[in-house]
Amino acid sequence: MHCGEPERDLRRGPRGGGEYVRSSPYFFRPVKRAFAAGLLLLALLALVVPAPLLAPANPAAPPNPAKSAWFLLWTQEVVSHGNGFAWGIVALSLWFLLMPWLGRHRPERAVWFGEGNRASSWLTLGAFAVIVALTVLAMVFRGENWSLVWPF
Image (cartoon, rainbow, N blue to C red; front, side, top):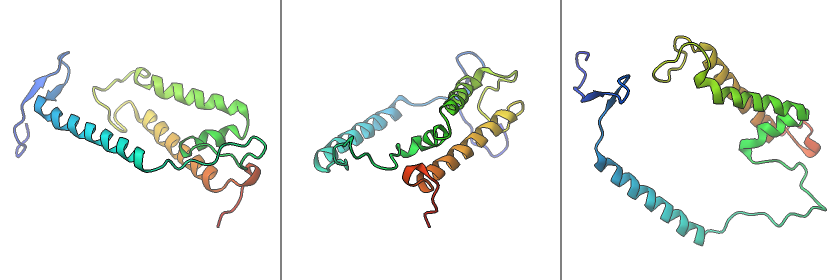
């Protein structure tokens, strides 16, 4: 321990690798109660506040442009340039799925830009920036027939 740090009760992890702080089982009771109260409140609000649904879909007059939900707009933007680009999304998803098992250096805990995982950190930040940019592009700068428009 360093000087000035409060003393903590640290034990060895189940596999002998890391350390963890013991917690009290009494802590989880108020968390469960708050979660149950939140679910009850949402159920009551669902009975009182109507859902903001649109009119039933009319296949003869679809909206133009028909945009997906905001969190999927970036995929719609990628696929608008060609169906083959969807494989890039699949490859990126597989990369992020398999990332903990790839590479030679496996740290005990996640660290941004740690030794041996700088490339993964840069890839993650770059993918995040591209996804945000594509979402903004599709949400703000796409108009009728999915053409680029200047909204301002």
